Length: 140
Image (cartoon, rainbow, N blue to C red; front, side, top):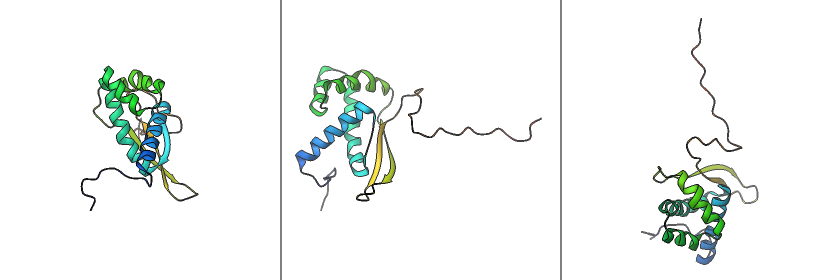
């Protein structure tokens, strides 16, 4: 029975899985959008949201805790200076997972993980623009 066992193993050893997630979260904060499998994306989401919350705290201890996970000092600086202030008024839900396609080689479901844009920030390249509603017919 798997009672109270959270998280996915992803067919990897513990050290490999943790390092893979660290690399993925570093890439996510660096590029703000990555493509991966759905299972990895769902695991990545919880780690990324935890790190954004550390960035919102903004103190030295939070920065050191983020440096234990993120592999690059530049990315930690970007997290604390650019990404975290974007979500200052938001409590959770900092990422989107968009299911895209199946990979031709092995048939695994792929998804895009991205940080949501700040209010007033334009949509990213590649996203479909929303259609405007047409006015009522039968004008003068």
